[in-house]
Image (cartoon, rainbow, N blue to C red; front, side):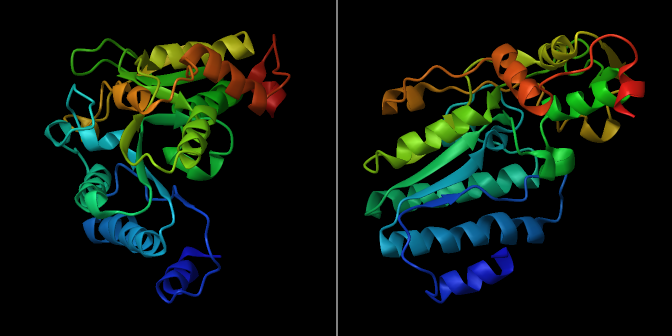
Length: 275
């Protein structure tokens, strides 16, 4: 059902019994500055779901974000490290704080996942907010080259670094916690290792066997607001008992490219072939 129908039915108690709720939706646009819309969509909506789950004692597993850390360089699940640089990050940080206040009295599981840069199949509907790996895929297919930002904040061209995590690992973490309803809290979900945008681009190019990187001017609108470095501290996740090794960028992007394009065009003019 549409979300405009879902919320009134949830508040009215007009839904079938639930085993658990995975609340993964949000407005994830980091460039959205309509605070009223963002707080209604990301904060109030989440609060209604949370209170329903607490009343019904239903596990709630929800999406937070690495954006709560803003431009800092420590990515630990502690309030002292949280300093969002945009309205999206603020809405996520505020809900995490609300959850923390209620957790001591909660009688059912509540888990927040601070996703870092997620990529992988079935993200095309996100448009501009889809992963750089998907944008690189289309750029190579259509133009034969990947576009990356020039250097900024002391980083060389394309060397800004993010913690890129494959969707398969994100799903696995969610299901692992679902099977352990005694564990609640807020946890980072990333690989624990930052990779450069150049590494992602090269992994895409390797899939096609050809292509190049073009560096474009860094947007003035993003200066002072851009996360040039993120790297999840996954110590809390490991202490909770999650032991599976997460995919690195080279393996994860290669797997993703294969799912998008099992037999890429190799040799000749990729643009002409795609047309």
